[in-house]
Length: 391
Image (cartoon, rainbow, N blue to C red; front, side):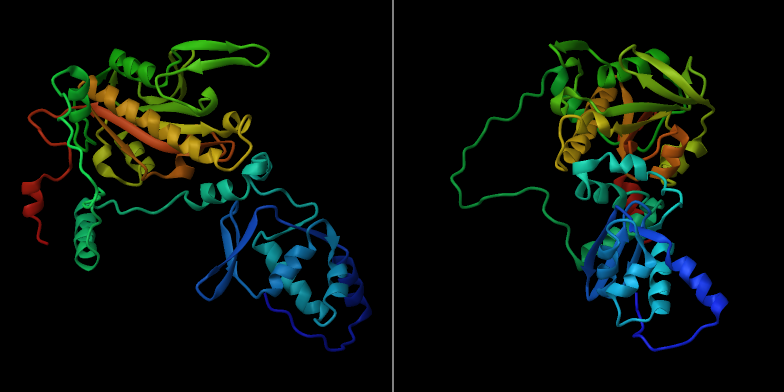
């Protein structure tokens, strides 16, 4: 924002009357604006609307002034050294880019819901919106080429940490001769699937053991808490599961909500194709042949009810991770080919689910299909296939 220093000028009466009317309009700073320096530039960002600008530090003075509903003309008194015309233009631009709100205009979508985040703002909400709708590389061969170039200029970090000078205590090898460790060792992120359908009872078993309520615990004068197979902060269980079923025997293709209390599926929309899956998963075409995918969303009010500080947002993310690992291990035990991914189209999925992305938002996606016949590796490209690439 750049204001011009004042110089005297006379205007026609009609123009002055119109200016007086517009100068009486009241403005207020949008509630979700932050500022920071990126290199040498000062950046202002409305993280709810996703709008950001670089501007002069004077912008902070203007935004601070409009901490409540104030008429534009009062700004002229504060900044007497600048012309009203330049200040009008500055305010107009700030309002246009959603940093100022004009009295009487509609609220930005999600504003009412995000205000309910209260003490979580701005730390958790800024992170929440800053990491949505990212762009991804859908070409696996191109992705591998890019990794090769990266590794040449910046070698891959070591996956483990060691203290070579510390005293060493050798441990006996883990026991792997029972079912549970065999399931752990067999878990992989699959990118290939059989054309065969997953049976409905298998899907039901997987959903029930991952998201189903196993029991209820009553707390006097507070309420009942759900017991599930994965931990949850305060036993509040904010994560919901939605199933996009493409090829499940005995279940019409469609989008369903899993009711973990009653162990049932609630139909939200009919129809599901491979194209639906790939569009939701950022054009990762290899997942289009999966039998079903699971959208994990968070109903944040459940966690906020008890934890009124931004750190609790971490707990919600970790709980999605707990559930996803439970899902992958259970699917492996059921001889399915599970996968999970953070590459997905947030807004597209939330629109399909009918959630606002604020009070309830998608956090993670998992899915599965039948294991492909005569395939012993889960990845899209085997070592021999990679060696054939023209790299």
